[in-house]
Image 1 (cartoon, protein in one colour):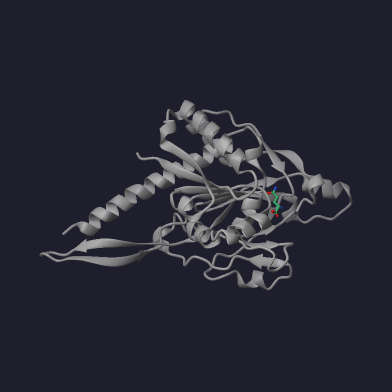
Image 2: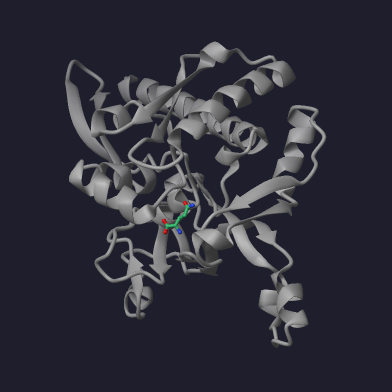
Length: 314
Ligand SMILES: NC(=O)CC[C@H](N)C(=O)O
């Protein structure tokens, strides 16, 4: 199989740390599963042509306002939205019985390539973000969630917490690794405050809220690609403990808050964590994600080949 290219958006923030941990994850995957390091290529992404080469992308932690401003001034916002949310158009040839070879242009809604955002990256991937000045920053979108920026307070209120990440249990099977809690590093971290309905167009109700910004454009939902366009946001991890903290300070808590704050979600091929795995030396989430990326890319390459063969068949 030809190489899989994974990009890390390198405009600001912890992109170097992601690249280091990706390398480490590949070594661990190779030891566990015998897959070759030659299969992967990791690149820094600063412009549209580098993005074009990527099969998958990481948006690192950092400062989401800065990342979005730099992306806008580098003309990268729309290419990023294309990459994460929708649509690649391509021509396919069609031959008809007889001699006529016609090229028909078929619009295919194929992409929504695998993308992972950590912390600021999660904010950028949200369809809605609050505690943000209108016009202050732009979102890429792709995850039907509302994030609360800086939910845990200022930089000085950053903290670490041991997280139980059930999605990593699959590593026990694929890589025969023992799954112990993961050290979540939260630095001015967001949380997922609300799972939003999946619908076409922008999140209109969100756009009417105070201090809330929404991503500007959304994919048309096409059931033909339901793997990529999965309309279901899955909660992958929660941070417990807040409920206990609040109850000891005499504050009433409701059942929803008591269940913990959402710190990892996935919707189709788009994945977000509000903490920073890239600031640890633990490659397990990178391993898990690369494993998913490999599956998606392999399936798509096979589907594309079959499609090409079919379209040229008499
Ligand atoms: N560590 C981080 O990535 C912080 C993100 C920050 N809350 C923001 O708005 O961008």
